[in-house]
Image (cartoon, one colour):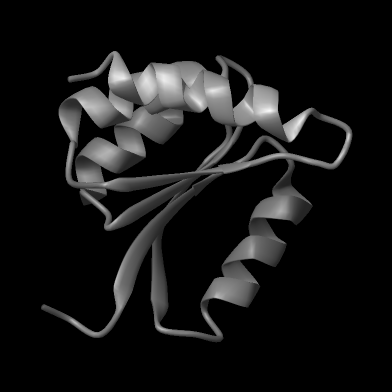
Length: 104
């Protein structure tokens, strides 16, 4: 196993993606793909088969939908949801959990 974790970052805001990439690359992470919507997040995940996908919950196409699709096709990939403080974290967690559980 490599000491570097591969990551796909999906967010429709270019500055947010750039900031996340910059922060990750300070540590033992390699950003192998970026996406701006759910469809391109799935495509990047399937192409790169990352260790982790970081997904914006409110990107076009829906972050929750992307969780379900990625989890179904790449069950070994960890998925982390990104959101701003304007959203109820319990609602985000519940939706992501239902999407991931439905993929099995």
